[in-house]
Length: 302
Image 1 (tube, rainbow, N blue to C red):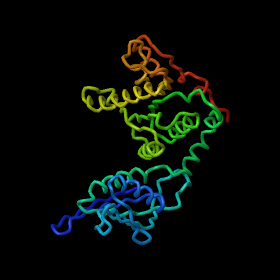
Image 2: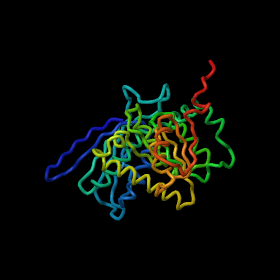
Image 3: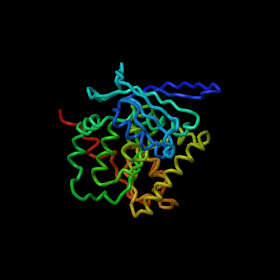
Image 4: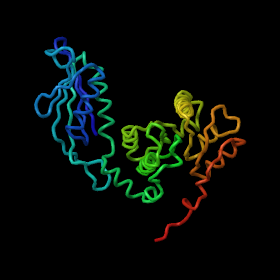
């Protein structure tokens, strides 16, 4: 997805527009625009085969506050997995008057995320490359159905495959909170956009902020406040909270016996994380050691 922004503000006809490009189709675009327009007391009225006009719902003859136009677009370097290429790419022109600035900003924000989501065919391919998840995902009632999960690791395609499996295992998307570690993995923005589209919460708990709290105090406080809120909401809903962590940074704080706010269990992926958790003091929760498990240490057969 690429974006270009322009603005014109002559006194007689103030206007501004944004151009966005990415994989979507007219039906998906129209559905999303109609929902967002309604939030701003606007209605989306078709004007020709490739145009929507957003006008006030209570004024039949009012001038459009926002105009969307689109046309087919062929990307030079499609940002997809392997050979999976969505059939339709659009170039979208988002034009608005001063009265439609809030609705246009809302639409632009939605589009910037929507145009970065992994295509459903790509998600199928990701799942197919992780057969163990399909093999061990229960098809009946799961013991995980009453849990909420906080997952912190790299934002890569495997992250999506694993979190999709958690949903199939009975954890609703709203009770999955994914946190990126802050490293610059390829397609991290696409992973984030897809998680939001699936209904999960997606945020950032940057290693830099944890390692240098004095210079990243506000950033760290904001991230931890959101984690606190998620844990509180899960417990209020009668759910237990499982942390799946790379580095032990959450379990060491929320798993201590004297923690003011405690999770219910943790799964640690690394040896360094286990050492960090151990050094934090007496634990009040079980911690599953995946770092030294057969699943992680066994060499696959050729």
